[in-house]
Length: 177
Image (cartoon, rainbow, N blue to C red; front, side, top):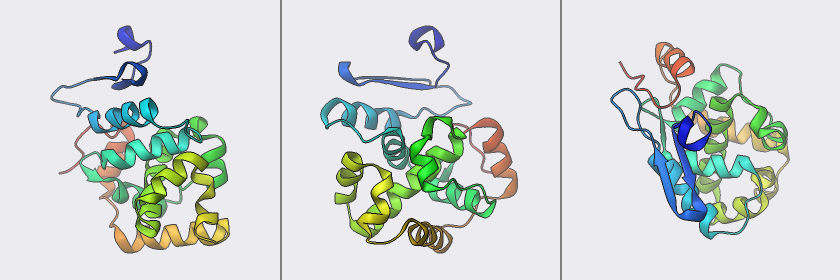
C-alpha cells in the first residue's frame, strides 16, 4: 500500500476517480465501507467542514473496531478517561491519538443521528462536529455530559484484554476471545 499510495495505510479512497484500494488478508480486515464512504461523500457532496466529520462519518458507517461495535470501543475510551474535549477533537483532529479521535468522532456522529435523525449527517457535514451542541440547543459541557450518558446507557465496554489488543494492533484485528 505504501508503494501505491505513498503512505502505509490499509485503505485509500481516490474519490475523484471513484476508486477505493484496500488491504485484504487473513490477519487484517479491510475497511471497505469506510473507504467507500469517503468515495461517495467526498466525490459527490459539498466540501466537508473538516477532517473530524469526514473520518467520523466514515468510521460510523464502517461500524466496528476489533470485532466490536464502535460504541463499545468509545465506551471503553470514556471509562478509561481518554475522551478528547470536543473543541480539541475538532480543532486539531489529525494530531490526536488516531484510535481515540476516529472512534470518538464516530460516536459523536452516531449520537447526533440518534438524537436528530439522519438529517444530522448533512448538517454536520456542512457545519462540522463542533456545532453538535448548538444543534441540540445546549452548551458544550451539557452536550459532552449527554454524549457520555448515552454511551454509558447504550454500550458495554469491551473486555480489558480486547482493549489492550486493539490499542496495540488497531481496529483491523479481531480482538474477540
